[in-house]
Length: 138
Image 1: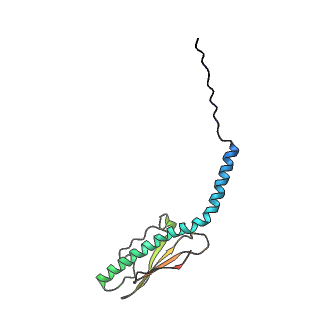
Image 2: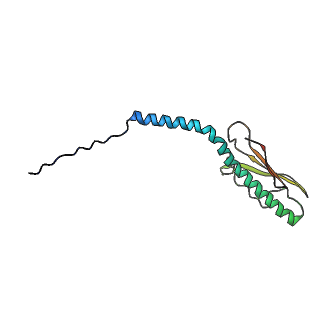
Image 3: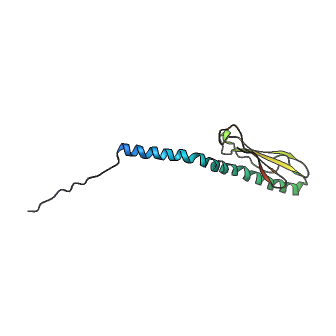
């Protein structure tokens, strides 16, 4: 006669208390890391302004070669402003040309959202030299 032995498998899981302790520890680590990550996030968002201003500079130079002057209109040079985040789009910066004449121009990228909720909105400018500067940090 063959004896069949029943094998009882004991499965162990984590208790609710153990899971809660792990979640609390993860939450504390996130809270400690978040302030250090905010400048990185803000820097990534400012890249949008720099790219747009570099494009404005290139379009302005092309326009000047063809017309012997810089343009005072972003539409005239062929720049297409993406729909702003405040209007349901994705762009965080409003681009405009502040001044333009025969030899100089100045364009601005002004943030439409406050990245760190301090009431200060980020502003960048570019001129005919191609120098992109942050005039108001956020």
